[in-house]
Length: 449
Image 1 (tube, helix red, strand yellow):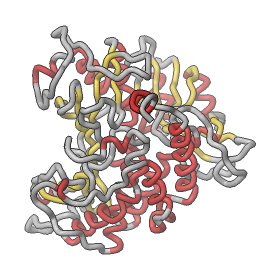
Image 2 (tube, one colour):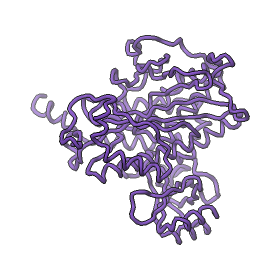
Image 3 (cartoon, helix red, strand yellow):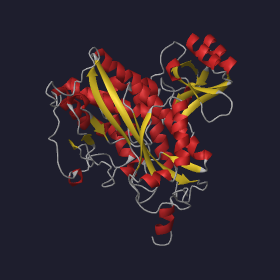
Image 4 (tube, helix red, strand yellow):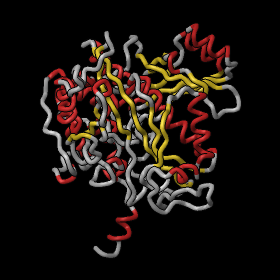
């Protein structure tokens, strides 16, 4: 409390944005004058309706039964700021702070289906074993022209050259620099809001970019990824451009992913558990990989949360269709980067850029945890294309949800309330999508069938 009070006073903050990530990773919350925010913290008076965690990506609220997930009474939950997350909002003229909150019910118990709590719950599993997971996400996104008519396809924006990209410029330096006016603001905003980003590259799609994060604590990296999405959108809009983290925003272009590099060290010593003293893969590393292979296909709704997500999980464009694994093989869903023993890690390539970072990391880590505790054995590594192997990932959001609900080992680890809440929200979104008739259907079926 004193830290937050001092922090706000030193920076002469006028307003505070109280942020809560919902099921889709969308920032929800409220904005208060700094003095009222501090009073709310002292009096436990910062509240939101509990239904915020059942809100769909369209802003709707699904029909619910009167049970322990939701209630027609829609009681309040209490917001408590995490002091480690308070930051300046860099795009406002007046000093404004943003801070991420955890939520509790009237009995002072954490809201179990809040996505940030789900990740905390998984991290406690590792902590109880004396283990410490390390992650480093990589987030891809597209820059596109401002699009106010959703019936029209997205188009690459005009850069400083005065032209839009028409082909692949993967790793093109000048192609990135065509938008350096945007990325100068992105890096400035990230520095001022303490988001620890590293490398910027141009990806394979037209005006598709990737920014990598430095490795660290999963909760801190999830917080940063959550704030980063908002930061990039704001920087782009300042220059009359949209930034989108849709998994597959443009037809005939690569999708956007959130690759998660992960490793596990011994909490007490900091030594890796993924390699032995000679730098060879350890038994725990192989079990961790096996857990990813076994459980990630059942956890896909946490990695590919939207109907659009499954347009990305198709052959080619470096997108996975299975959970084969191999060394430095980007056709695999699980890639082992070439690395020394202490840096041994596995790269989970399944998650889309549209995923809630808290849930994507929770899914990836809980799958590896189950592999380690169940002492699972992975399949043999492959060389060559993984696309010649069977397509074992779900092909639709509905199929993914059915697999998710039938996976019993994850229930006590992620929590029954979360499992049910995710099902309710995602089924409501699928039903909303089914009510929309696409332009493809009108073009090809209107007069032909």
